[in-house]
Length: 120
Image (cartoon, rainbow, N blue to C red; front, side):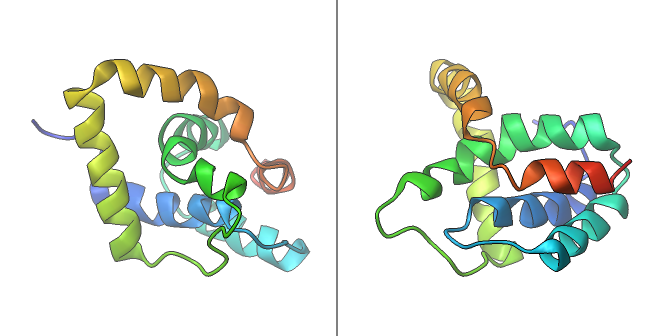
């Protein structure tokens, strides 16, 4: 089944947004760096927020609730593998994907909002 997006466009966005789910703190420079990556993508703010909520949060969100959460960035290869697995899961277990889409918006990190402001 073909993907409804170009992986070359989506992978840098997924990788940048996955950082929001690291067990670390961000400063203004981090917000600007992530916003720069997102601005280079073909997606606008609303689409990026949808990608964050519906794709990245379901895959990486649980890291924020882990006692020993990941604090080092995921590389693009890891992000690609995790996201491809998620895409496969959505079609194989649609009920699980629907549940995650309901839960995921509650997992949006506060660091998204200063980044979103930089996208305007």
